[in-house]
Image (cartoon, rainbow, N blue to C red; front, side):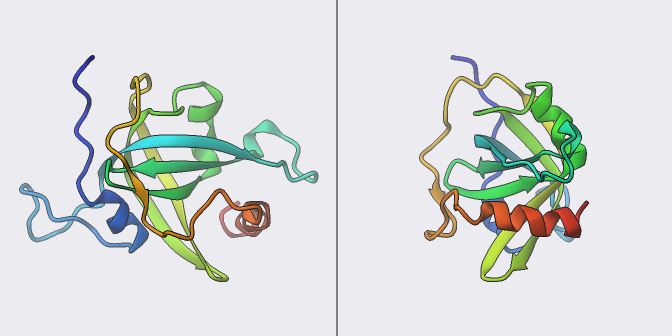
Length: 152
């Protein structure tokens, strides 16, 4: 088994709470660049008014090996999924993201990611959802409709 890229400790909690993580290189200016693993990629049903493949919505579950959370991939990052680079168990670097409160749900938006290792062979650690109530919810479709407006 190949050695895997080290995941960023505390990444999910930081992403979920919109806070940076101090690093040895930047102790005074917390970085938002984090290395996480993709636990799952799920496509959300298409908006019938925008049938183009480019406007598909993907929810990814990401993990730092300890905690996990759902995130929505910004559409400009869809090519990574469509080209089969970003997939289950991939290791990715998140360099730009934010967490939004929509109704009673926190939704993480991944604006800028890079795939470091497309072919990781399995799940790292035993991540638990940062929000215990979080599941791949039936209302994800409604949220996707909201986000089609918010981050078209």
